[in-house]
Length: 463
Ligand code: SF4
Image 1 (cartoon, rainbow, N blue to C red):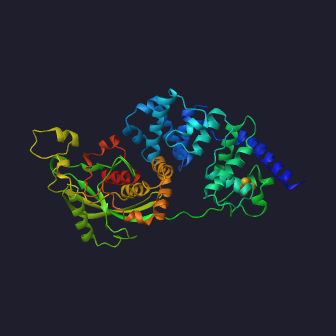
Image 2: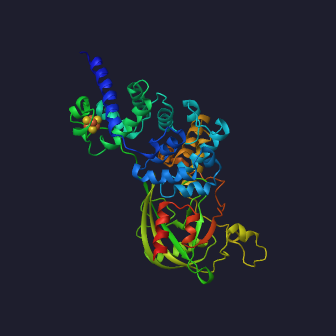
Image 3: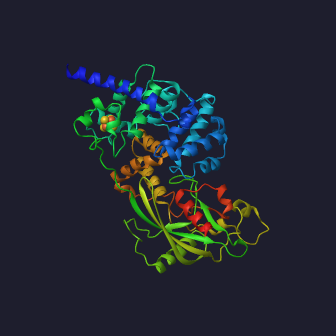
């Protein structure tokens, strides 16, 4: 038999055996109980970078709260983010809602069933488009993510670097060839299931694998070597000082929180006030800062935001890794001191002309710290504004799509080191007026916090 014929036989065998195995072993997952494209879309977005076990309760609650595309499109963003709290990569939630609004406006609330229309929705890349089209509508298109590339690399013994774009394109062509006529939905799910349950990253279960007989990678002893993947850059370390500011007097038992800017990292999420430990961009800066010096900087930095504090003591240190940045957060217990906030919602205080205490925003205007990501985004756009409209659009689209894609944005910054020298004139000296609130433990249910801050607040209120 010729090589070509052998390859063809291996492909037919793979598709056939995989489907037989899937029909018998597929897990009963909530989003598999119907072909509802909205449900499948939500599940696919939630499953990005997140384990199935984690997603199940989130998915169930999300569908109960937002049962239709219209319900999601018209919900307050705060509620959508709150429903996403703990899942991470919050731009997924914001993009999901923006795309739901597009579906309502352009497609009368029905998730589109063509590659062109679905790919035009915010936050939907080739994988999600392929997954929704094939699973919900049976369209014979591939859905290739890292799991699928791992399985295909091993089965066909492919040594292409799966971190490279052209490899994904090659895998998509291969995956499409493998889809049996009329079985796109089951086949794509079967491929994902094999990657999740059997052909796992570190310990592939070859002995129980339904396609073991023709697996080239296993036959060549390469199952633990494949897939080939060049390492991405490690996240940049950043040391930050965080003020857990407890209220006194009538605000005893409350803690001061603030809302992040409307773009960039963790946009519009709520957090505890914090500053860079050192304004240099050197890796590790601030790690060995003595407590007294750290508290001095924290007092000064928070003062620049219009809030006077009295740091009391160092409390805990928390770590959090985003796709491109690693935060080490030293937390200090603080009391308010000469705080000029009234303790009300800032909009309420701003409108309260009877109060002799100025609203919190009125004390702001000298903020020097610019969120590093905001800065980089602004500088990058500044730099790219001189480049072709296509590449600018591409980068902008990437920035809006998903936090994970900021890795590519970081790479783009690295390729243009001069952007660090370009100072974005629109940001320099311009204060960012944070919206502050005093909250109790009970109020936490009304605000969406990233995991890191949620954990600190929970520890604080549990004491
Ligand atoms: S035989 Fe092993 S390496 Fe090959 S596809 Fe199955 S689990 Fe993966």
